[in-house]
Image (tube, rainbow, N blue to C red):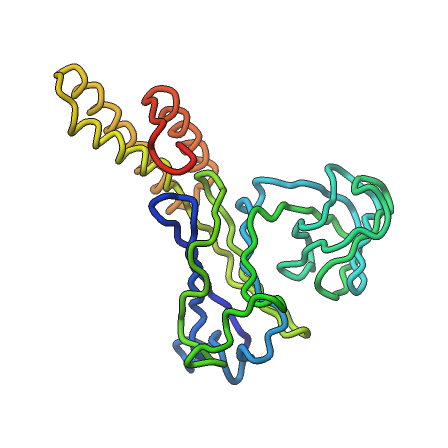
Length: 275
């Protein structure tokens, strides 16, 4: 058996805050074998836990190189592109999920032979290693933050709201959510998880609906009705593409819808951050 952390992120109506819900739950044979408690770890042995938000896999690569990891030392033997920096998650064959650069020892970030400190000790033979940016991080246990202590059912808690009203400053789009838990020996992460956030676009459509209701002239009503219909088509297309796993198409429609909302519909009051 092995712990399988589960997490949920949801936005509020204003699009600038997020609620983080911990969903791992109690271990139950046959129904929740990845839950807290024997034969898996429980929350009493956690040394670090965090929820990190990334662009969906493959969308943004900040740096890449051919290198290796020995212990907590990452060596960028032959640099390929971009700039390795503190806070980037490293991905590549054999790399532990959630491996992140936490320090720079030598180099400029884009030179051959640069060395860096990562958060998890491991052995990774020479391979192509890429760094992707962490857009937002929500610590759940890090020596300062501890959302697990004090829970009525700890150390094997039922699903609970871990964080509320946390700052969210990312634009509408698709994001990869990585929930990492470690006991200092093993590292556990959630299954691959992508979330679609189109709060601003939905607020834009709702704002247009309000304008449509308040419109007094036939011309204004017709124009606003067309704009509302177009936004509904955009939103349906985004949701449909996302549900089918066609993330590139979904992102392209989001871009088109955002442009429509800001330039054609002139929706300047459609929610936090605009459209």
